[in-house]
Length: 116
Image 1 (cartoon, rainbow, N blue to C red):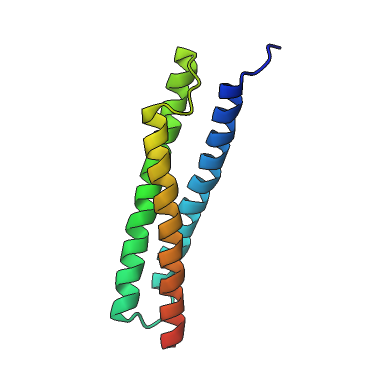
Image 2 (cartoon, rainbow, N blue to C red):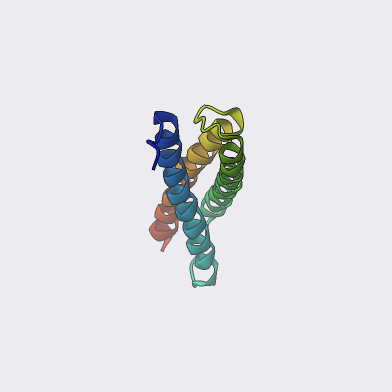
């Protein structure tokens, strides 16, 4: 078995991180949409915060999917480059949108629970 290069190892670690945050973003979005079934009062602020967090989580999911679509192409080209623009840019968008989406969802939950 050939030794794995530094670039290949870093790409593998990045793919694992993206895979984890993609699963978390999807689960968080599904969980938060489930709040609509609950008998909760949503203030105007809560509705806005939920809507924005859902948009951010959706962007995160799309960007994370684009990252995963790029990996097979890098493998086929035998160029495991973590700084590939088609991998790096959607990856940064994915992680940034994920973090802000989760933070806004947390704030929305605080607003919803405070109004109760």
